[in-house]
Length: 358
Image (tube, rainbow, N blue to C red; front, side, top):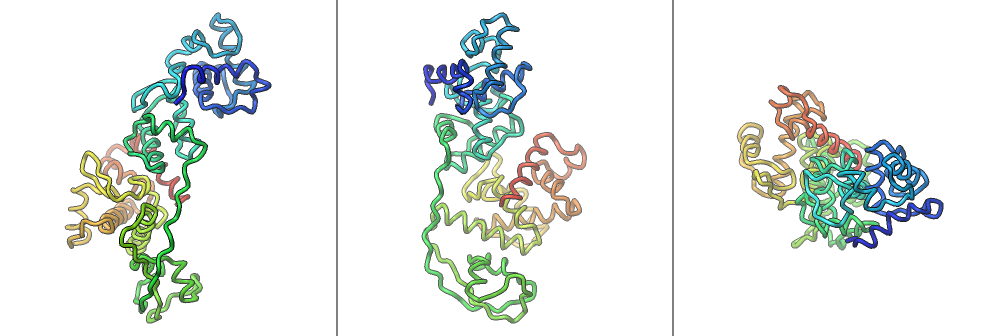
């Protein structure tokens, strides 16, 4: 974490804007957000101590009767108010806090691809969700609180690359195509992949899959799967049940990633658990009303229940992904009665953004 001397030195780089124009420092976004809030900076929040940032701080200092030296010293930071302190790394950050360090947190989250709805120094619900998503990606406990471990991970240039699991031996089994089958559904059912099916059977994935066709299906056997392998198995389960219930697979993946990061062992304070974070009440509804059968309390069963419920919401809201996701988060009755709440709109936007990348 940053110590006082290094933090002050970072901000002091503004004294020489010409030399510092290419310098990117994680403390600088906090200064830029504070200056913007006071109307003295109109440039991008980019962490670069360039001429516009230096000019903004000097203009702010002149307006407030301070020596216009371009340095964000103690007096200048006090004049900036709540957004002028404390430096990033001085405290734990959690929902409800406001400050320079929250601005830096939001900037670093965005740099890693987990942008919160606003970069404004205010730790709200959107920032908390972004922190949780980052923590899951970084292999940290997704508690939504940016403590020392989370802040240290954010300061890394990039997160560690997840190494793929070693390729397992893939036995094959004979499968005869039945009415309604797709390559995606068959691959998901047998923990294989469409690519493996195509390669093994020399298929053209754009051709029709004829009933009665005999396929050799590579089957993955992973008795003790690694984290990467578990993620792969979850994805296969999502793909299979999405095909079964007629749900866009990318939408289902985006929702699952938003809810759990493909983790099978998460349980929320209200009892929602698993990949899809299904509540006990929703599970009972899906079993008794939508499916009419008991579903095993397994990772695959959790995915099935979640996607069956998502398909139900899509039908209920006439195919509108936006309203179906809102109902998933807020409840169908509340969506009809009150419309989308602000937090719901942020959730929907996040899932739809994930859909395009999953």
